[in-house]
Amino acid sequence: MEFRTTNLPLAAAITASTKLKLIRVDADSIKQASMVFHDPSGIGAQLELEFLSGQFMVSASQYAVQLRAMRRQVEIKLAAARTKEAARV
Image (tube, rainbow, N blue to C red; front, side, top):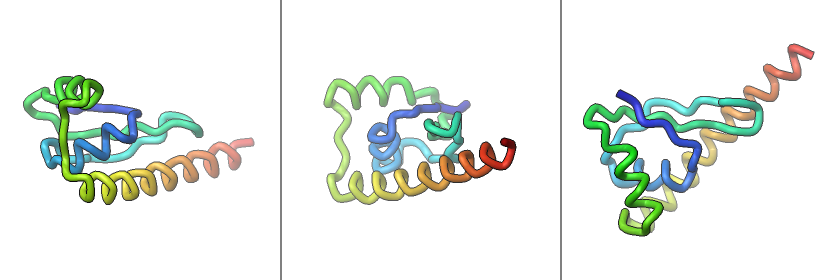
């Protein structure tokens, strides 16, 4: 089972918490990417609700590290999608 989100801060928090493992980053379009997590227990939606309500806590330093790393992965995927799109034109 997979949990997918386009919410970069949420993805960074989940990764920092080590509750789910990031499988991959997908470019959904040339402007948006999804982070896909391995979610065998189906807890991704619950983690999202906790995050959005401010109840999902992680180390600030780990969150910052993961946010930078995740942002870089998204930038790489979106750049590749834009290059692929430009090659089709």
